[in-house]
Length: 251
Ligand code: ADP
Ligand code: MG
Ligand code: MG
Picture (tube, protein in one colour):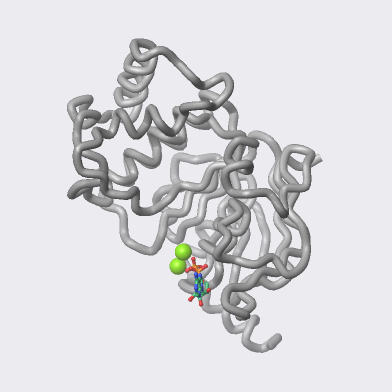
């Protein structure tokens, strides 16, 4: 059975329905891509799967690793092995990045390490991401660029080794540096723990080096198309207009 299964999920915020009877099924070790125009509901989907309390689930269910998680808190979902990249880490002047990373894995069975082992592990990961280790002593979030924020996300991902990671690339363009960090991070994650990925993006460049199993297109809070990786170059060429037109006709 699937690792993650989103079944007929309808979700809203402030009485406004955003996701309409959405289905998504991801098996262990698979890489899925969720694409769609701005405002389609992609980020909402990520947040609802992660249990963001801002959103209300009105109908349907989410199962993960054999359990119904629809009612679980975000923290419990995280402990069950779900991960959602967050866009803007809080700024905490005076707290170095390494301490923040240490806190992310604190109290996690199987992930806790002694200080020395932790430092060795983080250095190893930084090298994998082609990051300067001096960066680990920087204050958290203070003046971080988009690329630097991505590095923090990728370090967290690789430290936590979740069973399934949802990476929301947002609509803000990533510079070349950030793109390379994200690609390296995804590669390292896939090879080190054979985790599943759901990548939310409209930047298909980020997918170039990745073996994608399944592509889902979302328009107006509905999944309107599912296909294999061949859909990516097609979308590159044609965009989402035909999907948007079909959705408008159906409404
Ligand atoms: P995408 O990530 O595909 O660009 P979003 O999931 O961010 O789309 O947004 C989908 C729709 O839901 C938009 O109309 C957006 O304004 C609305 N929305 C999402 N989150 C909230 C929120 N917390 N409060 C109010 N509206 C929201
Ligand atoms: Mg968007
Ligand atoms: Mg979004």
